[in-house]
Amino acid sequence: MARRVIGFILVFFTLQKLVKADAVYRVELQENRGVPNGIATLGADGKVPAAQLPASQGGSGEANTASNVGTAGIGVFKQKTDVNLEFKKINAGSSRITISDDTGNSEVDIDVPSNAFEAAGAVTSHAGASDPHTGYQRESEKGVANGYAGLGVGGLVPTGQLGTGTADSTTFLRGDGTWATPAGGGGTTVGYTLQASAQAISPADATTYYFGIWSGLAPQTTAGISRLYIPKTGAIKAAYGYINVAGTLGSTENTTFNIRLNNTTDTLISNTVVLNASSVVFSNTSLNIAVTAGNYVEIKMTGPTWVTNPTTVRPSVVLYIE
Image (cartoon, rainbow, N blue to C red; front, side, top):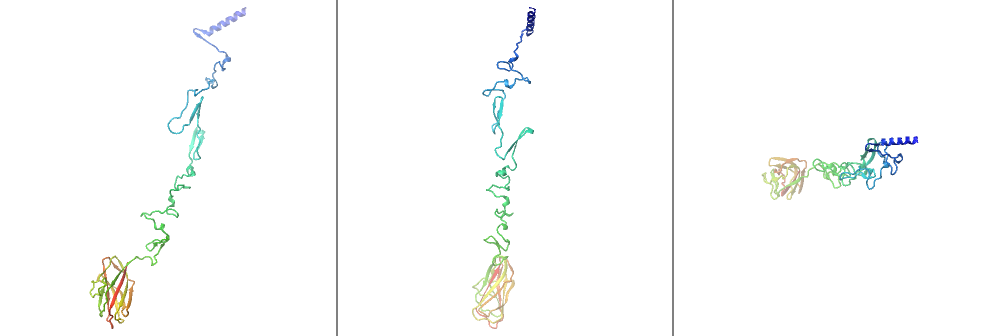
């Protein structure tokens, strides 16, 4: 009996400690911790373990989430599954880009190799190794075989790109692409000719006659009447004479022929012309008489004292000027 009384007293005092003023303390059995319909436990960090949290349905779960921002580009965030935020992987679409995980710096490194575009056929320089730009030609192909011609400082194609051989004032470019000397010799300027002539005359002894432009006029004893004018500045380089003796052939005395310039200066063609044949030819190819456009010349013929005078003499002289 005494034991029951003592036990009752202990229970009473225990209940007195649990009920203080207006506060009521409730207790749970230890066996209800962490079990269905029981109570949740706290981990060492003071938080409910994830295993005792409910699974999310239809996007529910923790309040925090993630999203892609901006209007351009490709976002790396995919979705949220329960409490897990899922992101897309970054992958290289071709060998031109490399992607590496730089764990030491907590970075994802994206790099473009220096030879990526050349290897793929795009050239950073038009003188690159493969040069796939078929619509263009390299600068290194300028002025070389199978390339293209360049222009000199004067805006013209250099003579070295026109043909082979030596290009200078004595050569010309042939159709076969070679520089060649003209068949008549190089280094000479193409000239022109003037002809002095006159009607027939039966010359008197020791008499000087002049003839030039007027082929219908007999040789005159006065200079300056039959002027043969120089049309272009140059030099008289040669004279070719032809005398036709249609009447009596003369004896063997010499007749002299000169070129008289502007009725002031005489230059000898020949002083050994003998009119003893029906056709007499003479020449001088060593002349170098400077003339200017507007000058005039005449042929001066000086006869000897003949034993037999020639008759019906038709003189003519062709002058070559260049």
